[in-house]
Image: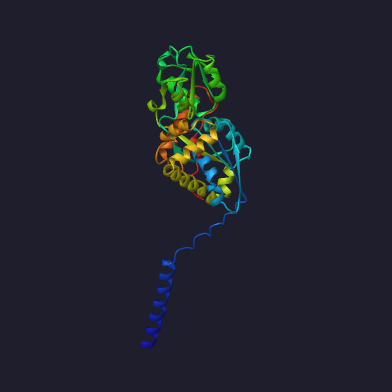
Length: 326
């Protein structure tokens, strides 16, 4: 009898141990799919895209992506960069804030990869030295040069809003930076909404007066956008891109003189102008996936542009932002 009871207790104890083990053993996690090797990386940059031109000069991407063919493609401004991105000509590129909103509103295939803070003095409204325009309230009826779809487009929109003016109150003249500079010199336009390094260049040579700049407006950001396919197929490589950009930012802050020389060589501006531009750079200027604050800033731009009928459809920025996950 005792033997039978002992046997039953042994069986019950054994079953309890088995059930306990089953309860404590976690379900195996699904095996992570290995990322396909990156064969090539095509980067879209502009002459004044500081981190990218420094990374290009120092071969930082070539070092990090040693097994991939790294190609660099230069564009005059953000809209052209995003057009190339949407057709698959590049994997990622750099732009200001407004170009992405215009591209998304036009149904272009792209995704926010990361952002960085812009200088508080990144944009300004310039007038000829002898101009009678002294403040933004006097812009009514004036011809203002601006690059359509650029970050200066948003800067001008915010400037008009602050001056209680509308687009109907001015005559926007859509020009590239080079053409706008020539037009201002010839007095063919009354003012010019533009970004660095053109601002510092005019400050140093006295060819224009700065009557208003972005220090009086909300914070703005610059962006690195990518093909959705690139992020989906190569999330680890996308994360490495951000790492390289932050490595570059650290190098820039540690080597301001060398950085100014690289900027001067890239843009053709005087070294003194390049040094002035570098002095305005936020330190550090960390590159990261879009934070709630950045998303809110971009959504504000999208809503403003739709309200002003600058874009045909509403844009929900968050649906185009990478969350940094694989």
